[in-house]
Image (cartoon, rainbow, N blue to C red; front, side, top):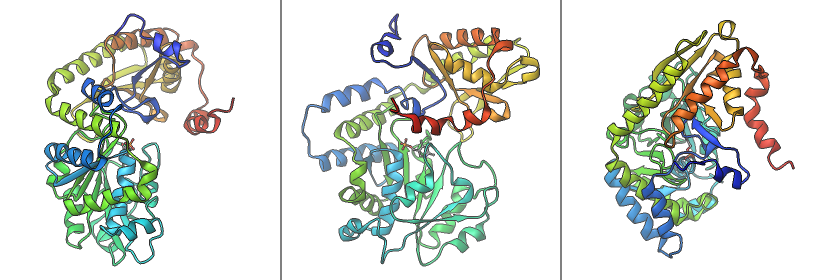
Length: 399
Ligand SMILES: *Cc1c(COP(=O)(O)O)cnc(C)c1O
């Protein structure tokens, strides 16, 4: 990375950010891989037949996932909406134009209660946006087979299964059993695997459509990937003439996502894992011996092949809470953003997957600077912090 990597930020009136949080929409998702960047630049000044480009994308998706067919959407979130819509309309253009009015269509979508998470927006809203009604199954911490079977009826159009660190980690029906119950009743299963590395496994166990983000681990431009059985993918694609228009995907995102998918197949995963591990080791060493701070390796909860550093803070010994430390790191220059989903429990995580060269050292240094001041850090109001994400939307462009 160039000596003054902060020049870009200064020139553009932006805060210099180091992302140890993960592939966060709020931080610009991921570092696009060079192939994707080149592909975007290559196609921007050209005209193409968009259906033809999507057909080429379908070939790349088929190759990568083993699906019969696929296409690129504006985002995984859009992919969920279009996939759900397709299960209601089939390949009937009149029905696609009728949405979100679902009169005369089966329009219920069943989802396990523990899967009704928030990934930056509510997953149920991405389904309701198609006009569907979401039918929650079971309770947040326990869903049983008979409850799923009982929730499926004449009006059921689809079932959505969410694979994510955001969902309840226990008590849910595993995907193979979920597929078994839905298949037996003729209900297609849509898997939201937006943030998963596994491009083949969910289809292999019988999911009908699987949705990925192109801008997360794949390092593509902002886009989503829909992969699945030919009929359902065609029905989902049809929505681009209807409700999908407001979620339009551009040629650059399609072509860039294709390049990212191809590059994924050639990526030296072992070398990248070793780099990530070196960053984790460095930070663990930087935290060793700090009173009240315990840093341990934490494997990814959904089985993606990556570890994060879990940092537990005992405020009575450390002199500051996990929240105070995270806030001080975020307030620094550069701003270091940690993964704070569980911060109210006294710990945060550090994700090594989105670092530019040299940034792992800067993060280690920032940890040192903040912890040296641990006794004097301002203690943020947990309530204000908790609601701060919404606050940023409300105050945007307030002047
Ligand atoms: C990130 C994420 C999404 C949304 O993906 P986008 O491509 O950003 O729309 C949906 N579901 C889950 C589980 C996610 O992690």
